Amino acid sequence: MIRLEGLNKHYGNLHVLKDVTLTVKEGEKLVIIGPSGSGKSTLIRCMNFLEEPSSGTVFIDNEQLTKKNKTQLVKNTTAMVFQQFNLYPHMTVLKNLTLAPIKLHKIPPDKAKEIAMEYLTRVGLADKAEVYPSMLSGGQQQRVAIARALTTRQKIILFDEPTSALDPEMVQEVLDVMIRLTSDNITMVCVTHEMGFARQVADRVVFMDEGQIIETGTPEHFFTNPEQERTKAFLSKILR
Image (cartoon, helix red, strand yellow):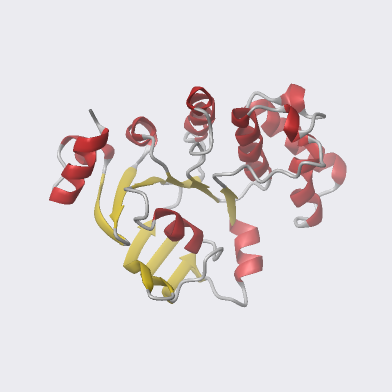
């Protein structure tokens, strides 16, 4: 569903991604972990050209992602949930969810509202449809952001550290929603520091450091018998 070949990303003299090659299968739940500054968020943002690679190629559903086709291809395949919720503060929750389906996907308003309520129900916030984001907790806002991503009914959802901006007591409510999503045939790529989540839901875990993929494997392999010394050192500091 996603294929990255020889991806490099430079910001001036800073080499953030270094020849990264990675394949994500249809329906796979891939979790990317690593220390801060390792290139995780840059990598996931390159998957939909929010960050354009300096070199290398990105394929989405076997079609190469380019400057010319990125808007249409991403619109038709990919949704994203960010660290910050990025909800429109002047719109109700329901209007936040129906905006893209109506404007981008040309779904009739009544149908868009029906879809939005379906997913608000799924994240446990149907009763918040007519309130504004400022009236919600951080965890609730992120659950709304996840529901918004789901309303587009895309094949791929990218999560860029979706719990990093939340108070600790709100983290689990967002992770619970994401855990429930794993039963769907959605391709999910998630950058996170939540090791328990990675262990529970990932089909495969990728560990990055200094712009490179150091190790990849199943959660069982990764958390119980990692091969690389850098992986072992990272895990020894966070799994205490």
